[in-house]
Image (cartoon, rainbow, N blue to C red; front, side, top):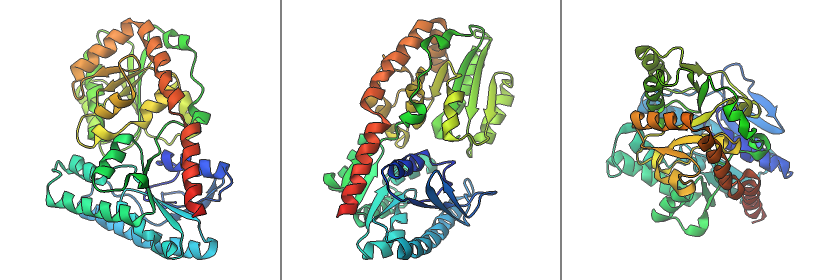
Length: 389
């Protein structure tokens, strides 16, 4: 596997897939970025991790980002070629962003190794969202071109939702070449829902929880503003925000401006995936406050599925992809970007603890249909089909 990110700290999807392969007898190597205080090589839960001397430079401009992509591409290509000469990989899996990282697998492909492109995010939609552009602008057209070339070069492509699979097919990808591997929670880690009565264990405190990347499109400021409206009506309200990202400083400043220091808490220290459930279980309500745009409309948040797997009720922005998998009996919807509507929903849930319990119980329908045991088996079967060819 090749991923332009730190492993395993910031790539739960890559970690889940790697562990699924390890559990089925595969040997897995991961080529990734090198964070400070990490060794250049390590074995993490059976996965051999090769870290290249490239770091993230988020928020420093498009030119710097492209230079970072190209530097990692060159180094990953060289490292992958060297490792392939030693191991003769059956399958090489490339995780985007960027899509063109798939071409780092050129040498293995020439020796009949199969290339699997794992599209975490659709790059054209990501670009439009990040730079407030349009799908018809020339930079986005270039991004779409590299996406098309990358998908054609790959032997198979996987994405995270049916909505994004349909988008790729609509851009010319053969349907049989695109599969879905959802970012469902690992039920071996997140598969122990808390006791339903735990929701009402402390009527004097109402805990909200958000974890993940801190970026503007994920709407964390909407949740903070909602807490500002509710501090008088719910004196014990607390919002825990766990994560890092380029929007963190702006969020901290917003908390100061609204004088919410005693109601909103930030944490950014690394929590291993295996320990994350104990923090989430402390919440009365998980918050998924995404804004709506061409990119977030296609994201089914991993955090949402982790809350549901743990039996934590959720209030979520009403986006097309979330509505495709959940209904109003499973999550409490609010209008994206509307902090007043979010505040009303939270206040109503605080007053109706039975509704919280019902939401958590009904959301278990999702767990029964979509769970990592099933999804991982389909993923491993796909890798085995590719390797047998």
